[in-house]
Length: 195
Length: 176
Image (cartoon, chains in turn orange, green):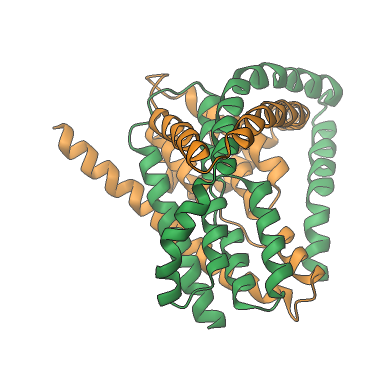
């Protein structure tokens, strides 16, 4: 992230000078701080809501039923997570929320999943393989129906706005599989080089 | 489509309904549990705020600097040869950075090229199958204060590029 952050800002400054957009650069800098505060406040409410709800799920024991049901699937991918660990539930709920396109629920549950995974992590400053797998699947964004996209298409008079649903599912599934394979290839390569 | 939309609108209310009923049957004090869980929210936000700020600064300034237009110009020749509408390039470049900006760009593409155009359809598939990678990465990693990310960012960027190519290919096959 260090390199990416540095590059994005340096490239922006260089380009804004070349294209004479330095004023826009400065303006967007302050816009960014404003957006960051707005998003954080919005997230504060929504994260607290989902944390409250997941606490009820934990206390009532519903968590065990949910994780029991999804354990086989999650267990196949995340081999190092112990049985009945809370991260199985938060990962499952995050995946389900993503699947149904519930972005509002997916983000807080994803943050919860990361914190649950962190309790298993030996080196707290270095990302664990489970976290990487979780993040790679998340950034590949598996989604069944992209509601906002279909909504915009139908709003502007598409003949059949839902015709994009099937190709979207096909391509999102393929790219998620490719992303996971990529991660495993990198893991192999990385660990071979270390030896 | 109506049914799918109805189902998606019902998921959250039904989920909360089920969670509450189940908890009450198990004799849980739902109100106290909720408060107890929710009070951690503030701490999490305090933790992730600097990460959100940092990534927003990088993304917003990058968008405003004209760098994306520059990349667009480089690639436009390739897109012409491959017979892919140039609008697709713009959505591909913006989607990994910002959800709201990509939605705005997508709306604009649909408006200017008509909803049934190839450009709209390919863009729609990309919208649905790509994620705002940099935002997700900094937010999720920030929430647990991970500093060393090994090869994760690299994997995500490569997978993003491959993902967008796949989306374009699939859309071309479907709508050719």
